[in-house]
Figure 1 (cartoon, helix red, strand yellow):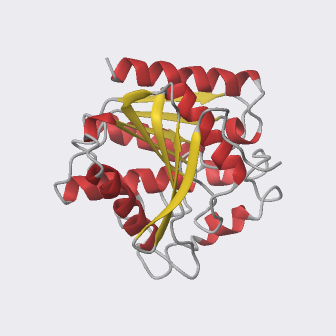
Figure 2 (tube, helix red, strand yellow):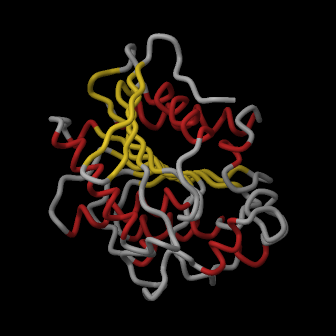
Length: 266
């Protein structure tokens, strides 16, 4: 089914230099809420209609008036730091429109969660104001393939597991890294100094390949005095809310995002 925005909403694509972006506007959204969405896909798959539809749903949940989505460059043709450079360009573009950083919500799923964290670490290191919050859905937090859930959930995960998805190979082989140390904190922000990062909500499935990515990120964030919330949805695979939005657990995860945003925006 072709992507269409709800009645009354606007949708356009535009270029920032050589970076393609998409902007959706919700006429009933709040002017002081702007959503930057960084999509997943193992750094090898581009923005597609399922991500666009989820972006619209997330704009409704967060009551954002403006939703931006980014066609960041993809591996293997464009390895690290290409996607990060594009995310920084997109964020700076939003600031250049007069948007206050405290009005920006950055949300990323899977590799987009990795990119969201990479962006926040970059902003910190380059003294650029942070967004209001980070929302991380099944995030990839390290490209070093050595966390326990990468083994014990290898067949449990029916979305990203060994026999479930072509993206498994991209994760296993760290296609995006190509020549960069897999524990370089700019690439694998699990190993970064997270002090000063904004509040973050992390959502993960109990059966997902990247479960320990979320658990270890939560531990690191706590150690670095970051306001962090982690919710693990038992029995759920990677990106369950994207793949199966009708599930009760998916609906619960949507409510959690809504409530988290409203608390932070008070």
